[in-house]
Amino acid sequence: MQITESSRLLRMSLLSNALFSTVSGVAFIVASGPIAAAIGLPYPGILVAIGVSLLLFAAGLFTNARRDNVNLTEARVAVALDFAWVVGSAVVIAAGVLNTTGNWAVAMVADLVLAFAILQYVGIRRMPRTTDTV
Image 1 (tube, helix red, strand yellow):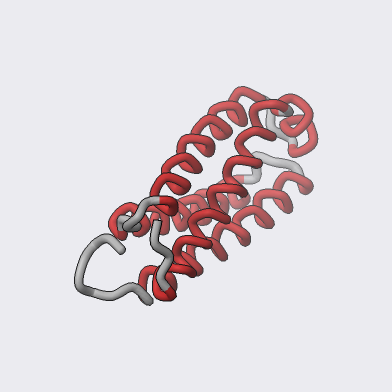
Image 2 (cartoon, one colour):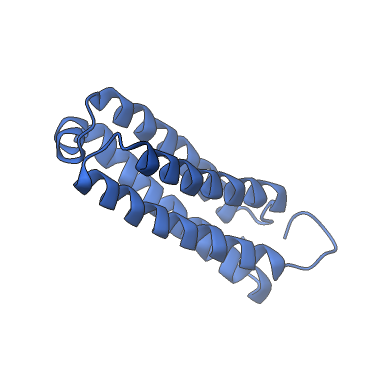
């Protein structure tokens, strides 16, 4: 893997997002019952499904970040999925399906996911325009 100055931000953002997604995914799977109870979610299985999805997402991020040449199309998809997470979080909060603790937790996670999306987007913008991989 060659880390160039232009790819450093994108790679570090993808890896940080992968780490956060992995930790979150494992926590959602292992502690789905207690987390669901704490946030007012009636079905812990939802958290297990989200946890598995996060682990798959994290694997893709990690794989892309560790390639010799980062695939910019995959990085753009990651940004789009992060933005979709933020929008979905706003919908969950607006729908009122969680308790106050759950709404705060969802909002805080959405803030962090938005930060990853922005950093990845800026990282993509810093890449040379000559190819879709770097």
